[in-house]
Length: 93
Image (cartoon, rainbow, N blue to C red):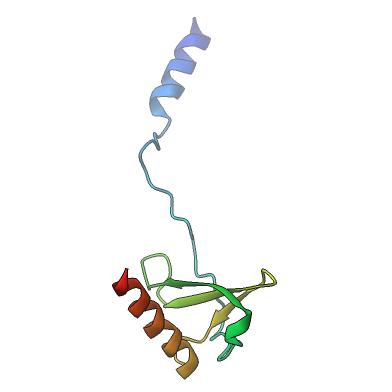
């Protein structure tokens, strides 16, 4: 009986997590300023992560055709062009 009471109490006190979204990223993915240029022909995918509560910096991560990933320097001219092009493509769809 004591065992049942203990299990019931443990069940009641267990924090429930149902419906609580888990962040996809729990910290910044990019360390340092990132690279200024990647040959466009090598780029397979571009991901732009705005600053958030999880990471206070803008992160641009490109996946290359060989499946490696590179963090881009958000302040470089090349990266700014990538961001502008992505915004144009997104607004046209």
